[in-house]
Length: 301
Image (cartoon, rainbow, N blue to C red; front, side):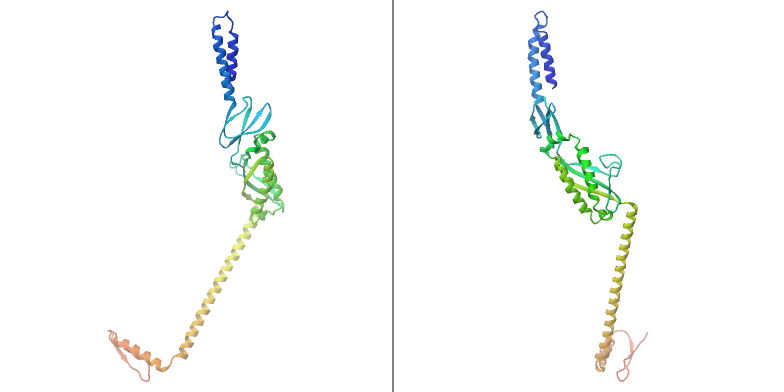
């Protein structure tokens, strides 16, 4: 609108000096021409609005918001209209107990009461985006600060409403995914009514009271100790089974020896051993017994 204002001022000056008595009256016509050109140029530039990628525009004129949505690129609009841009890319809103992690400084975590009356602290991140076609309605009904008016209060309220159906320990461990899915459905429905799309809900951390934490840790320690004892007992059973099998094998071997060896077989084995001794290069003395007794070996050393 700068060129429009400048053009109007130039036209006013041109008409003001359009008096033959003035020495510079001859500049009146050129000033009028320049003024008209500036006004036209200003109206043209004011009518073209550029919308960046990942943005859409909502058009308002004298307080009335049009249903037209300006898409990324160059758009022709009424030069007197104002355009408000909305980010339609994925946005996140984090509520955390850590000082610098959330959208608000300090402890901004969500404190809820569970079914067993305990207070649980939930750290949460909401991933969402603006529905492009709903940008004019959001601007008309909510404004540009939809984070504080919709995202934050709806999320915190729905988490508190759903946490009362779960015990603290179940919320922390076995039913955490169920809890996350439940609050996702309720928040998604509320967001959709307001022109927002919920993409993902991330339960980052669930902090339990210290007394509950100590109880859980004691339970886990006892379970681990029980598992350790089960392992030791199983190992001892396996070792006992191994010894039993070994003893049975020895007993079976001794039984075979006592029942399967004959005198002739023993004599044959003795003869084989004597032949091997005779073939040995070492010097030795062999004293042969009688009646099949084993020989006595004496070394010369």
